[in-house]
Image (cartoon, rainbow, N blue to C red; front, top):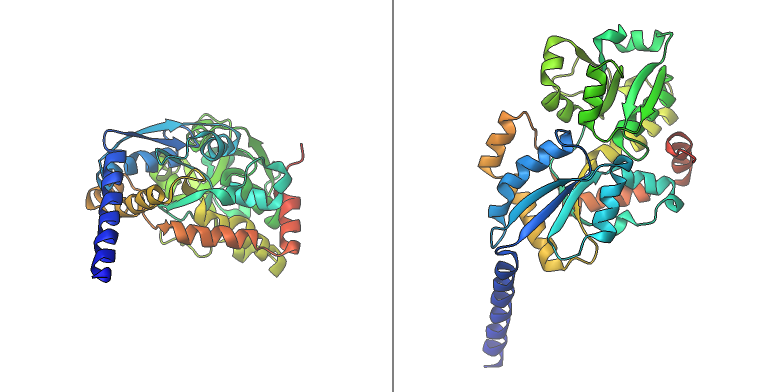
Amino acid sequence: MKMILVCVLLLAAITSQALCADDFYKGKTVRVIVGGTAGGGFDVYTRAMTRHMGKHIPGNPIFIVENMTGAATRIAAKYIHSAAKPDGLTFGIFNGYLILSQVLDPKGFDFDTRQFQWLGVPIQDNVACVLRKETGITNVEQWMAAKTPVKMGGLGPGNSTSDAVRIVKATLNLPIQLVEGYKGTADLRLAADSGELGGACWAWESIRATWTKALQSGEVNPILQVTPKKQPDLQHVPLALDLAKTEDLKQIIRAGGIAPSAVTRVYVTSPKTPKERVDILRKAFANTLKDPEFLLEAKKGGLEVNPLDGDEVKKVVDSLFALNPQTVAKLASILTVKQ
């Protein structure tokens, strides 16, 4: 009799919790903060996902996307961490290279990235460096021999667009002038198309989806891959790993350019968000990435899907904080910009 009573009470509790979840999100609006400009890679993925995510949450809430630019996505990250109410109604994306940035310079952060609730990533980035044809450079050998540094654009320290450039400059001795302060990858494209920049480095998945016509016409050319292996459609483009002359330099590329790329497009919600709402958001995030209607839209838009769930993201984050002190010191000398 006691066992039956326990089972009845447990079932009632579970049912009550499910009903509460339905009641909570019903009629609500979920804000999604994008740490980048409209039209950039973070923005394109987010808008595609949020067009389908509501149907995977009990109560079918409405989603509103807000672009919050500045400080290489740190403003957006800080807002989600410290300003957004931890109620499950706000989540967003910042550049996961910020996590490595905190590993290298913990005193430079007034919030702890390890406290985020990790929802997942839709695609593990594979960084490529592309140059405009006006640079006169169509392969890495020409780049290495260039007499004039190529102007490469970046958002700022702690962002893949800047950190990947610093990594290849330091390890491969490429002639580069890094110009920072752009608000998003859409701005990098515009600056390159106008002649302000010679090129940039960021996720090939994003470059290919948002700079399609320029790539097809040869106005923009992929020159270098900062990836563990060659991408299927970039077999002719060399890997930075293969060009590095020593194992120490290869390790710098792996730790500073490749490992953080897995979590570049990291989606999080605020610390102290109730577990049941984090679980709802995580499940909705994962189910959206398997949704046939989303996948069809992604395919039409040239958006690849190669996700990590929240637990997998946490493992990557933990591995970055577990880097040995020697590697951290070397990376800090390359990536940390003293004010």
